Image (tube, rainbow, N blue to C red; front, top):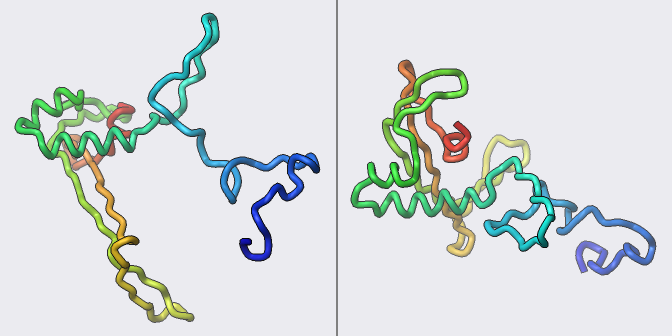
Length: 156
């Protein structure tokens, strides 16, 4: 039971009602992604490529782990095909200066009081602490620094 209703059929298939997709709030924003290509019978066409790179978050995690442990970071960048010099979409020549990896842990929560003048702070229990790492490639364009994500870098 969830706020006065249960999660049974709701008359869907039997009433001819089509639900929008998986999950309580409807369809997901994009289709599920996977590395492998499902087996096809001879002559079947390949599915069109998605407009995003499947599992890029997993690739980024693997890059961060490998780069952090690499004895020779320069060679690791070459192996990962990270360009030391490239051209931006606006035509600027970019030169790689550094790789930044930030570790972020959310250990507390803020809740505004009514009226929004003050707030309540609560430390999070261990099970609710979130950890993320952010990866950026910092290039110089001749005038300023340009931090790029892995997705932006791969699209160059």
